[in-house]
Length: 340
View 1 (cartoon, rainbow, N blue to C red):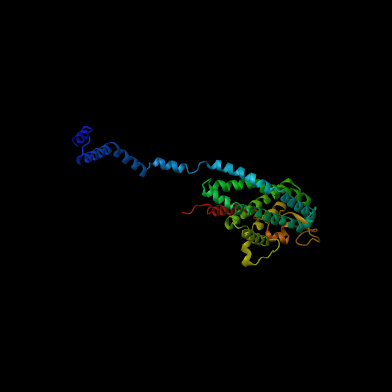
View 2: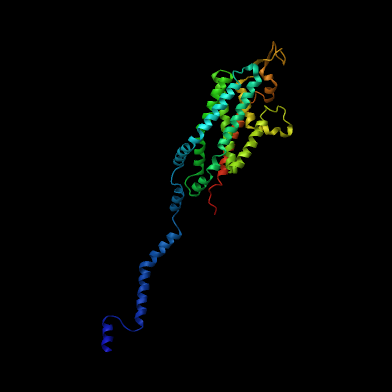
């Protein structure tokens, strides 16, 4: 036993109970002198990150710029939509309707004033419905994709929305341009380039407004069947209040014409073809004319709509053009937002 106790003492280990306490004190002292301050500072940095780091996180929320997102989405939109917008069936539909219209109104002149007015109103009606139903399916068809991509933070809503509008512009305007180019000359409307370009511009302007209404309805409803029914009811109401079918609208419902796309488009189309001082053969010199010639401005159907207020009609359509797209944009803000 003495030999064993001597060996332990020689190795520097004692059996006394005081030795473990001294080792503990040494470990505590070493921790305080070497590690305590370092760990405390690191914990403080974690709890209170520097302001520059927060700013960097805010800046880095989007991995790409707005313009880069817009460019990529624009290219994708053009590739996706060009085959659908210029499908053989849609081109055939427009061409057949254009040729049929040109044959029905073949070389109609000012002596058939009512016929020419009917063609202009047909312009506003056909190209009110066609772009409306083209645009009304845009957002309902892309709802699931938009939800996934927005939830994952792939791009800003504004870049997506603007890319859709810009990519659809050429596709929306090509077919009505072809339509007017065919029917205008076949129907014998005023043959000057100025009148043709003014008629074309008014129709394209109306197409953009009707397309905006379709975008707004599609974004608000997001159900294709319901949006289609609602769009049909609204556009039919606009047509009935357009000033062609009913010239004396009851006062309690006359307010519809002030929000009617067809009303303002029809007025602008009449202004593109006629002036109040233009004349037409009216037979027998009746209606305030002399020698069988009457003023176009005195024709009852034209007088009811009026050839004045062209600028006001253009401004009203411009307001609709902007408002409908703003409604569509704000309606899309609820899609793809992660709920907390």
